[in-house]
Every structure is written in structure tokens, then in C-alpha cells.
Length: 199
Image 1 (cartoon, rainbow, N blue to C red):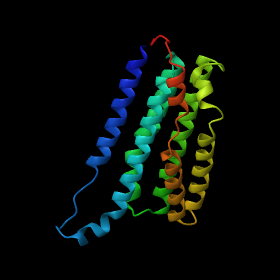
Image 2 (image 1 turned 60 degrees about the vertical axis):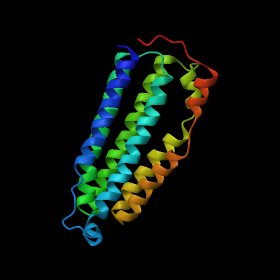
Image 3 (image 1 turned 135 degrees about the horizontal axis):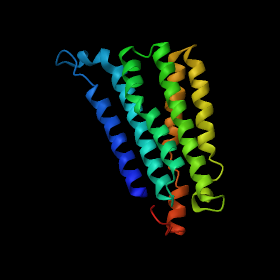
Image 4 (image 1 turned 60 degrees about the horizontal axis):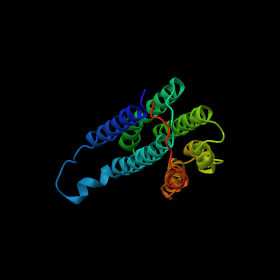
């Protein structure tokens, strides 16, 4: 399969995920600001999830751009990632509607954890496909952020059963970690332009 087809399909799925989350936002009853009071957990959940989907879209774009081959393993690893990302609207709505109750907030963290692990699986498959001397391998390096993120999610899920706010703080902290520009792949693309075939 040409690489651009995989990118287009993935972009479409991520766009649908955001659309579903937006459609889940219901207008409050009433026209005053006080009507928004009981809806703030829903807005906070939406904003956090939107940021996460945006982070995955950005990193996924750069990851595939640095790739030269799309194998069957890459396709399945990519679908595995999209599966977990497609659950974000569900847990976002569940957590927001229940004002960050313990179980929904923990479930949200589990989906984030599984998404991070699925992204890691995709990276591993791509590295095996391209080899340890490839541009993508040099760009990713030790993937410190990825490893720290998994740790943060596990800690956040555990803390949710002590206080959902603490768990949510770890989820938000992980998102902030990824909002800090990470230009490893982008720099490699600029300095080592790839001429790999797209299929």
C-alpha cells in the first residue's frame, strides 16, 4: 500500500474522532453563565482529549513522513493504534458527564495508556522494518518521552483511586510534556531528506 493512503486513512479517522467529541457537546439549559457551571467537567474533558488527539496526529504525521515502507505489520500496528484512539470520545464523555468520578477517570487513563503502548508498538514495527541505521531510528533515539508517558499513565491510573483529581493531573501533565516541541524527526527530515519509495 502506498504510504500516502495510510496517512490519509489515519487522518480521516482522527478527524472523525474529533467530530464525534464535538457532537457530544450539548448546549446547557439557559442563556446565563450560571448555566455553564455544571458543564465545566465536560468542557475540561473535551479540551484535554482534543489536545491528546492533536498530539497523536502531529507525531503520527512526522513518524510516517520519516518512514519509507509500509508493510502488513505496519498496517496492523497502525490499526491497533487507531482502535484505542477511537475509544477516546467514549471515555471523554463518560468522564465529563460523571464529573470525574473514579471509575470513568481511571478508564480514561487506561485508554490513554493503551494508546501510548499502541503507538510504541507502531514505532517498534517501523524500526524493525527500516533497520537500526535508518533515519527514523536515528531520529527517535531512546524515546525518553514515550517511556516517561507510560509511567505517568500508570501512576495516574493508580492515583485516580485515591483522588480522581490527582489522576487527572498526571494525565494533563503528560499532555503538557508532549506539547513541548519535540523536533527530533523534523530535524532529521530537514538534514537527511528521504527518497524512499512510498510503497
